[in-house]
Amino acid sequence: MWALDVAGIPYEVVPGITAAVAAASVLPIELTVPKLAQTVIITRASLRVPMLGSIRDYAGFVKLGATMVIYTGIHIIDRVVRELREGGLDDSTPVIVVYKATWLIRRS
Image 1 (cartoon, rainbow, N blue to C red):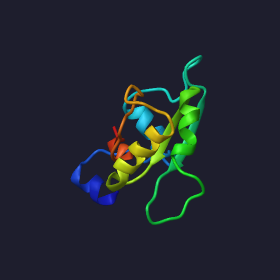
Image 2: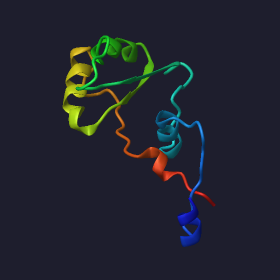
Image 3: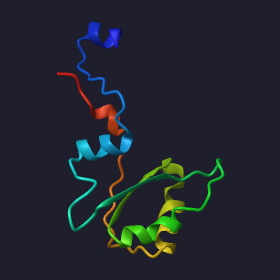
């Protein structure tokens, strides 16, 4: 941060903000919307780390009105899409891919 100050580069430190909340704030969207989405599921997808269940297990909740946030690397995005489809979601399901959301936060 000192180097940014010296260089005159604006930034903002926001402790405790998760990538899911940061992404929603920079888009800007709401993760919950009355009568549309009242639940938020935050999960992850991984090739290297064993997980209980899979993304497909949560897809049904999206059909019931949940918003799902999936932390993952772009290198397995095809697998995530496949598992969501296997879980019953189709191509009409709204999707947003966010990259480095917390990098967009600035200091005034």
